[in-house]
Length: 265
Image (cartoon, rainbow, N blue to C red; front, side, top):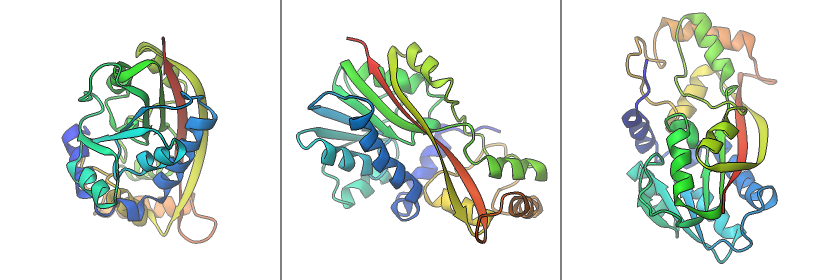
């Protein structure tokens, strides 16, 4: 099975209007990332220009504007409906359509490139990290969150036991990140890993939430939709039995990695 960029773009475009109402995890991590930039990464004292890469509805850009009153934010996303939604939510940043693997900006433009839970959707991180390094000024900071390899392990294991594959997303391991960043010309200066657990009424509720935020794109070559079928029902039964929530329903793990890396001077 393959997960193509066109499918990812289409899923996020379709979810633009429902994203903010279903993305409590992303919003929580966004707020923590803004604090992580200031507290752990030692960014420039007064960054002039910040890029929010893979901006979605623009929440991270707004948080960084609150952290750095004098900064200017450019928010970039490859799904145009997300940019439209950001504008409808009074995002004051400059909004630019663009792909994180091929950013539409000149070299050495930004003091900070920031990104919240978007790098897992790029081609393994390599090209997008190189692009972030390219558009950073010397000494500039890349600060981002991404999802590690334990993300949605309960879903993947339950589906595997039922005979279906649930996640072709190439989650990057924490050990691999410094290597990829070094290849891009960036030195890792801060890392943190925070597993976050969310509860859902059942496996279908989890999958519905993923779709409402664009995180369940269609998979080319999949023999069975995760939304229907006997195998899905079997996987749901396995999930409920093996990974029950503390109350009712099921638990899901998100392996959130915070990382800061600096471009050499």
